[in-house]
Length: 108
Image 1: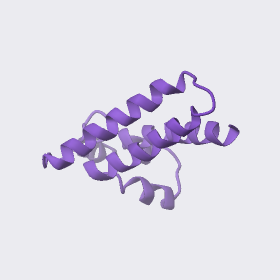
Image 2 (image 1 turned 90 degrees about the vertical axis):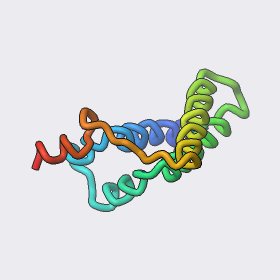
Image 3 (image 1 turned 180 degrees about the horizontal axis):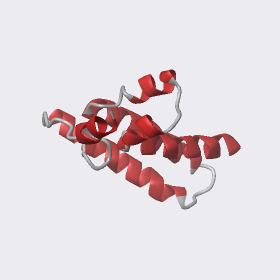
């Protein structure tokens, strides 16, 4: 159970860095971590990582149901919506507020 707890905690940090790219610029992270995080710029890649995190959550509640079921449901829904956006051919749109191109230009 400790392993699943650690994976759940790691998932939360991944979500924060995926959804707020500004943090990659202001937090001291390694080049390897930055390269890993930059992979998730397309809808399909985001759907994939959210699905993996959802599976981890679902596995963590098999033995004993807990409030993590809410996280599992939300991650599954997020994965489904990112996949649907990819199937429909919708391009990913980054927010200037959360670290899109506008913020990147302001920092540089």
